[in-house]
Image (cartoon, rainbow, N blue to C red; front, side, top):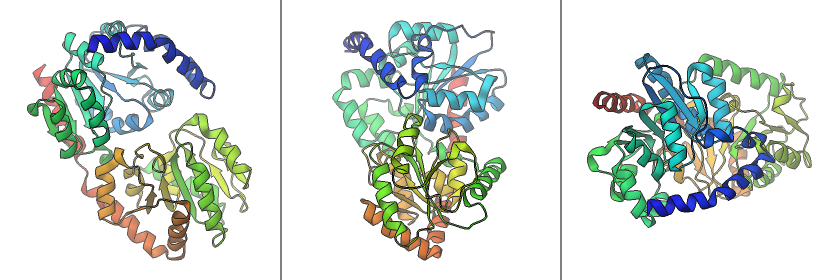
Length: 424
């Protein structure tokens, strides 16, 4: 079955290239560094053993950063290799880690690409973040005797059903994984039911709870707040990590909110940078709209702000009063609810939360998260909290307690990594 899968992948390569070219129309970085995706790049120099960390895009990269920093301290005689799949993830690695790590795009899941990659990087251990499981990648690591740890692993019921339909590929792939460090026991049970050996499972928790709101982030949040309010106090409502199809609904909710609170500033932060300009055009057709990237203080009559920069969502959340998490009014599964919870912000979302099922359950039980199905309901809820800010404070404090109570996953994950490195 894996041979058939590989043949199918090779046959689809023209479509893969076409998709890169299509995405490059709005995000030119997709047209660059193709050779890395095929395993062609200058080999890693030196004789130091290496730890390979793969994080698909921005979310996984940000989640991996505390782990990467800890590994740098624990293993100063190892080199860190960090791969991503998307240009936005690559930009985050370059911006935060620079030359501290060896960075290239991850190779395609094809035997020749993977063999070139592994020969050029020579990792002693592979750490794959969350759910990025590819059959040829796992098989190539086994062939090169590179143990694989799936870190902060999650597997939704929907994804598990997809793997079940491909069990002839999934089962031998999971058998070659040395350890799955799962976020929750439910995730772990799904991995085992698909073929992961029970002794290869560890429940470590979600390392996204181990984020740190350091002083630079707090200072930047205060700076943003001052720039946006410009000494005129006004509430700020952020719609974070929005996807296509959600912005129109958010603007509808904003229109309803403004009927009672015209002083509200709406901050929309699209998930993907190629959508920055289109969302700006959409908002500016109806409201006085500014771009955050312009770096200017906002006038009091600015109604909508587009968060069109990368890597600044955390301080943007800190500078806001109310949060709607995107990717939840479309069938995307949502984004990181822990970040606004750590800031102590009241959180709203749609119903699509399968990527953060356990986190959303904890926040809902603590009454720190409210689910809203329509713009009308969202508008009603926002107006209520604007008129009764003490209710928003109670929600925010409840979210902070959830975030604090669930810290500690990083320590458990590092113990798993220590164990695998010691064995091999």
